[in-house]
Length: 298
Ligand SMILES: Nc1ncnc2c1ncn2[C@@H]1O[C@H](COP(=O)(O)OP(=O)(O)O)[C@@H](O)[C@H]1O
Ligand SMILES: [Mg+2]
Image (cartoon, rainbow, N blue to C red; front, side, top):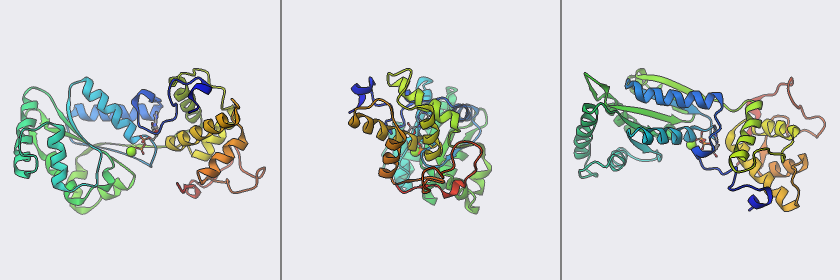
């Protein structure tokens, strides 16, 4: 809506996990390198955790691009509220297995054949599961069993990446998943951005959308956006998108604290110190606050 007004070619703050908008923060870079290394190493499970909105799905989408470019076969399960039969059916669909996809026996047989064939050609196969903290126990059990498949020459036949919210780690602590847990070779926990990253992230998204030198958000406001979003990319996107929309409605090209206040009120956003009167609010570096006090009611 506001794109033409600011000179954007496309929406800079869309909520979709689009690799074209990737901002390569040091930790996102490292997370992606870990995922890629994990797939290549053919040794076991890789776990990616992070709070809601920190960029897990975006990382998986980048991995998907990488696997496609390398012609590595993979199944990508993004809906984790499924039962074991549906899980195998989705794998069969993604890997295009020629069998009756609703028969567990047939799928397992065809899958094994497919994996061995790939391994014989020196190729590995990946299984990516997003929102894995929601998985049912029997699906996790299937994943554990698939992780057992290996060939003496090439190692594990399938490399599994499990991504999810921090409770995924706690789920994997269950006694019946001890074996799976022991075979996790890499784990990475995505943290929210630091302040410098938040500012660069915002500029980077606006540059990718067609405005290389953004001057909508002054430095003061970038600090405020960081404080209020706690460095969580999804909240930064929502905040900036709403702020741009308000600027457009007011026909102004520079966002102000008043605009941000309105946006945060609309988002029902709470942040440390945010409910105090203006002027008393702890601002910028040096003042500590309790991150657990922060929550979005969205
Ligand atoms: N490194 C990044 N570069 C660009 N956009 C990002 C990055 N990390 C997160 N985002 C954006 O933040 C939002 C939330 O990311 P997402 O991957 O869906 O988070 P999660 O899966 O952890 O909940 C998306 O709009 C995504 O585009
Ligand atoms: Mg996600």
